[in-house]
Length: 341
Image (cartoon, rainbow, N blue to C red; front, side, top):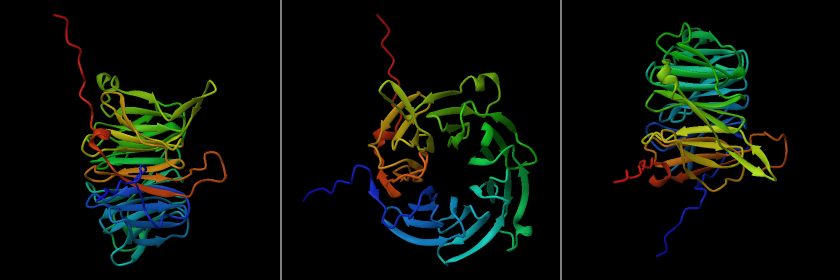
């Protein structure tokens, strides 16, 4: 009997979105995968079985999505709405609205709230348990220095990255003002922010092939630990070609992380030891989003052109689900040279 060898890129999901993929997220409870797209859809897949379980259509491109529980979730749309949908019953409703496209949505299990960030330069918190009607579900509106580009949660901490390289760090228990206001340590526009799973800081990526490792501890010793590194670049004819880093995903067990760039590569990094652990074979086009499954056994990769070079012929959007080998994500122990006798 011959062994079936999975393709190098991973198993490609059938029925992918017909336009660019804005985000992909694994459930905290299963191998269900939620996908939002510029084709105005949010889709639910069983990533292990390679089956699409459901689809909801919106009035505009869907810029982000997140799970509530295993069969329901929330979405952020370019039609300015925040929606809730239940795949098991096929029901959906509008949780609320912003005054411009909604770029980011997160659900906080700690606070029981949905947090949205918009190009209208505000954050909004919603209580999804509120009766239908926005007045009853809206908990608060919090002005931001610029348009919201990326957000990430860990415990009660929320990190918000906006245009103009601003970073606001909030405690969800007291949203009246940010706990910390920072400027990105990277010189160029922020693409993605993701908190460390153990809650001590966050990684930030930019359009200029760099990632910064930041720490919440404001003390001098805490801030001395931060650093940045170059990635997703190549040299061609003596010139450095630099690609945006669109995606960061942390491994839930080891705390190592994957980055995805417009060069079509996914790299895995050990942030503590400042080393690259692995580079996967090149994908057909830009990496738009990444997500590890709850146990870290699977990595979902959205290969989807992000229009960094304008409208040109490109590969169709695709989602690959790859089995993760421990050697790709486990930190390697430091080898210390033996002291001379």
